[in-house]
Amino acid sequence: MRHAAWCLLAALVFPVVAHTQPAQPIPADIHLVWMGGDDCPPCKAWRTAELPQLLAAEEFKGVRFSYVVKPIRASVPPAAQLPSEVRPLKDALDRASGGRSGSPQAALVVNGQVYDYYVSVRSAETVLEMIGAVRGEWRYPLPRCLQMAAKGRQCAQPVP
Image 1 (cartoon, rainbow, N blue to C red):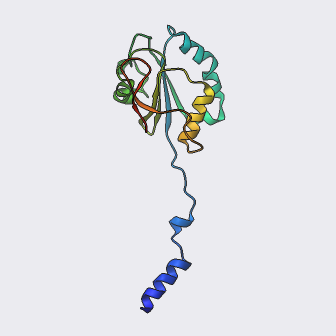
Image 2: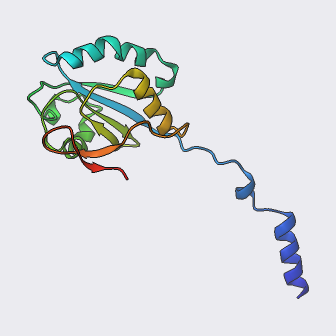
Image 3: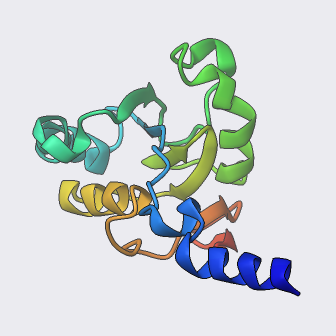
């Protein structure tokens, strides 16, 4: 009985260190893969207006950015046409795209996994909000999609 009392007292007086330490966020490896070409007016406008804002933003530091040339009528390009840092993601991008064509297409990849896939332009401000959410700073600003439908702009596999 005396032993049990000492154990109870110790548990109350000496809390477990894990419970007293603030939680540390897990650093995320964030990679934005942007796919579009010069035959796509919204793609050209995004690269001209939004991309420079992203690249200049402090919040974008540490985020990898890859630009993939992809004509409007093409799906995700073959691995041989992808930048070397995107080639390991080829199968995941094919799945997430649903095999659809159209431009632009983009994937926010977190820790090597497609976190969000979209087929539209998003402002630099929205992309920075997405990145902040991945880092745990606030809620994700838009519904996330893991796989697009083969046609249209519908998401076949939304994140609940």
